[in-house]
Length: 137
Image 1: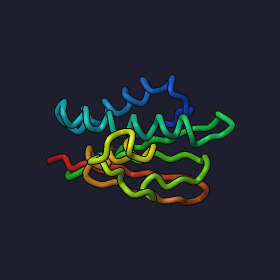
Image 2: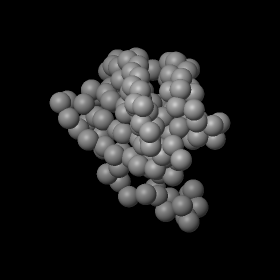
Image 3: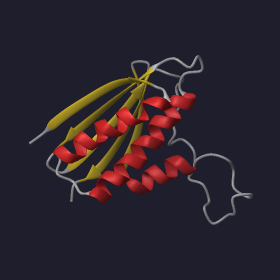
Image 4: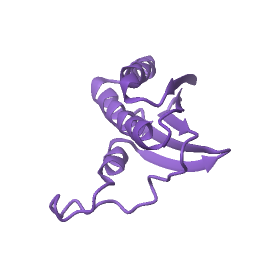
């Protein structure tokens, strides 16, 4: 069984509760447990907040979040028409260094990569599209 959900929402941090509610519906409909939901919440929240803060220099724009439930995976796709940016383009931070020694940035996407099974980015039709996939097993 495949199910598809979509939410178009202003890219504003004050809309995060709507995003989390959307995630909860997809995860519940997929029959996944609390740990799975927690990991997905953190991963999608990190990406959504980054889009809200950085994608639109003017401060105005939307995010489209889609969720696909397949027999094997739960897939979330976040797209925006803001400034092109590939968050996977940077090397992972060296977490063996102290916070003072490390370069600023990159910890959020590093955490996302650890919470889901696959992360991919593409720029298509004037949109940043980041896809997060987590196995249902």
